[in-house]
Amino acid sequence: MQMSHRLAVFGIVLALCLPAWAAAQPWTALSAAQQEALSPLSAQWNNLPQTEQQHLLKMARKYPQLTPLQKQRLHKRLLYWSQLTPEQREGARQKYKAFRKVPPATREQVKRMVEQQEAEKARAASAVSAAPTGGNPP
Amino acid sequence: MSQQLDHQQIRQLLNHSAARLDEPVLSGLRAARARAMEQHAAQHAHTLAVSGHGGRLGHGSFQQHRLSYWIAGLLLVASIVSGIAYWQQTSTDTSDEDIAILTDDLPLQVYVD
Image (cartoon, rainbow over all chains, first blue to last red; front, side):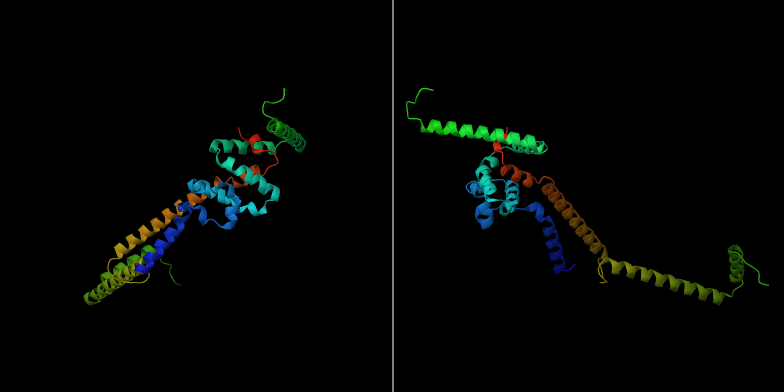
């Protein structure tokens, strides 16, 4: 077999193995769009495992299709999400899927209830921060 | 009226005729058979060599065959490894669900223990 044929075979083998050999990418190697989508993770990106980076890059591909509100939510939650254990994330996915099967009317009720709770928490937090030191009696 | 002969009868007739042939005719037939066998063997060897390495005739065809088998095996292994990696990536792809959770109306804490 000639040398050119051997090189061609080596190239084909290498190309076939590429999907299994995707290396981790430094933050600076990401495109501007990817950096924008994953901006909350810029500080720890280089320390993330390669599989985690690949997963997040897949998520970043969908970023342009999101509404401004969804983009805001994603940025607000991404750091917390990345710090969860794989088991916690899987549990969240299962709960999300289960919640999707709940009838729409019930889902809306739950959403309203959660929104009320969140609003109460926010009011309580702002009341605590606004209270003068030494505080009024409850 | 022609008589129908079966294979057995034809063989007996030929054997009988061959036994009555003269020695020069018999030796000529033996030589012709030997030449035909040599020609057949040569054609068979040529066919193997052509299918083995793209028409190049020469020495070391065994090594060439062995190298071809190694390359074919290597390509097969690379394809399997690549296929497994692709399957793992696609079968465990949860990016759609994760995006949906992270952009959902409900806060993340609702889903996380």
